[in-house]
Image 1 (cartoon, protein in one colour):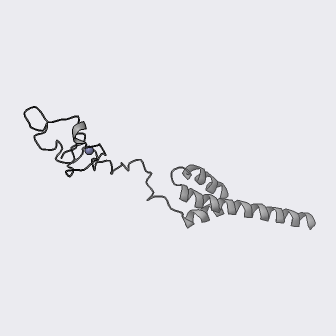
Image 2: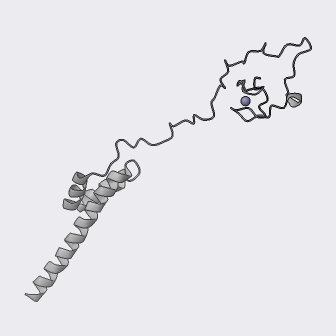
Image 3: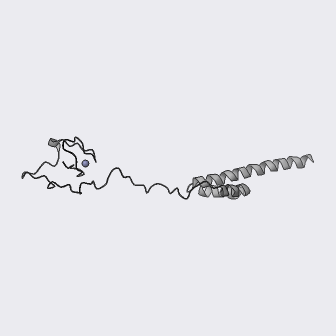
Length: 129
Ligand SMILES: [Zn+2]
């Protein structure tokens, strides 16, 4: 028996279409056999037995490409050595490549903290001497 909605071939006695879930009760089919005794599609499904848009194949185009994004040790070092550049790169990359931006920003944060710590130590040392 062919599904009247999507044309998929279902076994005789199947209650629901295996493709679209349409109830297949014989008396309630909207496409009842023609008066000549022939089914409306001549016994053939309209799409070769395949629904036009299989529901189990959702599109994947919306997903962001993740191949270019990865945490990078080099950018961590760059951010560590130049905290201001690391901060700028983090702000630029945080949307497109969050992992790389995170490693870069982490290095910048460490570099910034270290520079502040050494600045405070140096200031204290200078005031004490
Ligand atoms: Zn169906």
